[in-house]
Image (cartoon, rainbow, N blue to C red; front, side):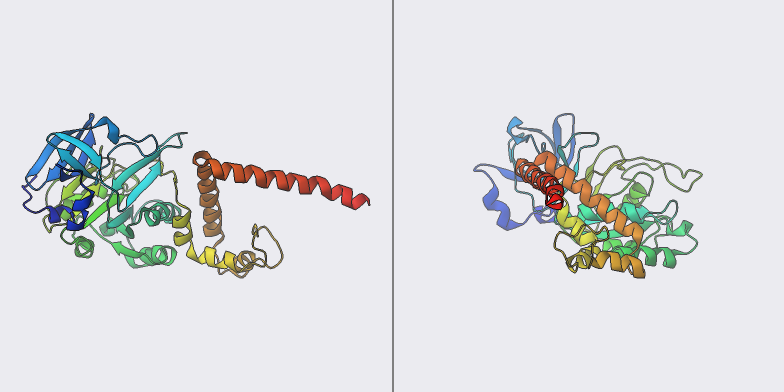
Length: 346
C-alpha cells in the first residue's frame, strides 16, 4: 500500500474534524480480521486494536470503509456513517451486518453470461438504494456474451433510474466508464454473487493483481476467490471495496430501497381505488389492470411482493412497535371476521 500524503485521497472531508474526540486523529478501515483493524492514515497503512466499546449489539463493530478515531494504537470511536450497505446476517439471525460504509457508489456486479439475472439484480438494487449511496449495475464478461446490447437493454429496462455498464476485464472494454465513477476520494463497493467477475474487475481497475482469480467453470461462471472485504486505493485516486460473493443477501431495513427499485409497481399501487388494496383482485386495482394488459411483468410483480413480505418480516423481528401494531391489526381483522356471520343472521 503506497503512502498517502493527503487524507482527502481517502475520502476525508475537513468538516468531519468536529466529530473526532479530543486528542484523536482519523483513519479509514481497510480490513477487519482477527480482532484487529487494518487502517489507512495520511502516513500509510497501520494495524490497530479496536476498543471494546466500538461493538454494537445491533450493527456489530467497525466495518470496512468506516472512519475511526485513533488514539495511539487504539481505535476509540467509529465516526458517524454517511452511508452503509447493510444486510441481515446469513442464517436465521435478525442481526445486521454492515458490508461496507461511507460509500459514494454501490457497484451491483453481475455477469452477461449464465443464468437469468433480473430478480437477483433487483434484490441487490433494493439494498443498494437503501444504503444512501448511488447504485450502478456493472455487467461483466462482455467478451463472452453473444449479444451484449440486447442483454444490457433487458437489464436497463428493469433497473429503473440506474446506469447499466457492460465491461470486459479481459479486453478492457467499458472500464473507463467505471473509472469515471471513481474520482479522487470517491469510494465504491462491488457487491454481487460469487463467480460474476468482481475480483477480475477489481484487478483490471487497479492495473495490478489485488487478489488472485481462478479459472472459468464449464457453465461460464467464475470461481469464488475473494475471502474478505478489503478497501483498495486505486491509481486514479478512487477507492474500491472488494467483497466476497454473497450466497445470501437478506434484507435488513430496505423498505425505501424496494420502493425505489420497483418505482413502477409502487406508482401503480398508489393508483388503486382502495388505500389498503392487496392486489388480489379487488375492484379498481391498478396493479391488476397493468398485469391484465401486459404493461407489468408478472415475474416482476411477484418479486416485488416477495421482497415486500421479506422486509415486513424482518421489521417485525427487530421493531417492537411494529410487532405491537401487527398484533393490533390482526386482532381487528379477526374481530371483523367473527362479526360478519352474526350480521348475516340478523
